[in-house]
Amino acid sequence: MQGSHPINIEALLTHIPLFNGLAEEEIARIARGTREIHATKGEILFHKGDQCNGFHLLVYGQMKLAFTSSQGSEKVVEIISQGQSFGEAVMFMDKPYIVFAQALTDCLLLHISKAAVYEELQRDHQLCRKMLAGMAMRLHQLMNDVESYSLHSGKQRIIGYLLRELPEADHDSINVSITLPTNKGIIASRLNLTQEHFSRILHELTELGLIVVEGRKIHIPNATKLRKHEG
Image 1 (cartoon, rainbow, N blue to C red):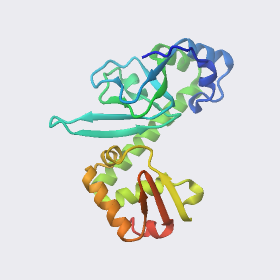
Image 2 (spheres, helix red, strand yellow):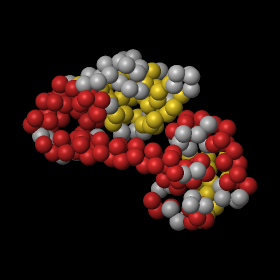
Image 3 (spheres, one colour):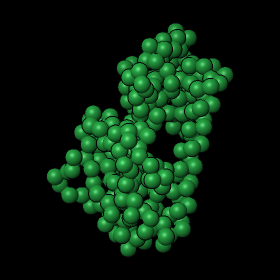
Image 4 (tube, one colour):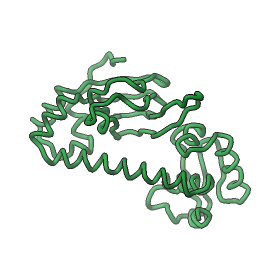
């Protein structure tokens, strides 16, 4: 649904890493092809099979990209956080969406039209390189996911996830904590695990003294010790 209070789209676009370095007139052109979208928690932004006519930038909130199997089970492909974009590859392919997007919290998004993107790409090769780099990073992450699902145990996947959530400065620290960005069921699906398996492994890591779980907060007494169990 659309927000009732207009926002300064140009100001928001200038804070998006993808558009860093663009001149005011370039931002203004993109803004003319951009609209704001407010999505409430649980709202579907688009369904699998919907036509893609641009890409989205998440200003604040959290979205999940997922698909549903023929048996009705859900697989979370990606959890989108503040400042991230999604949908670029599908936009360039001129294909319908292959996943659905649902708001995990109340969200504000910007939808940038395909026409505005194509027009700017013709003018600015630097923007083209940035978008290619962004899609390449996402492909790299997807390949890492496939490797992890194929070669790593559930325990290794969860430990790897917890360590990735740590700030860089805390990778070898004592007594650090992270807060899971969303509920355990969604994270389990993202890691290709059932929620029961995910909870069982958290319990096992707790029994080993490697973590302490308090709701969505995970305390890690010794990050180096936890890393040694990643394999």
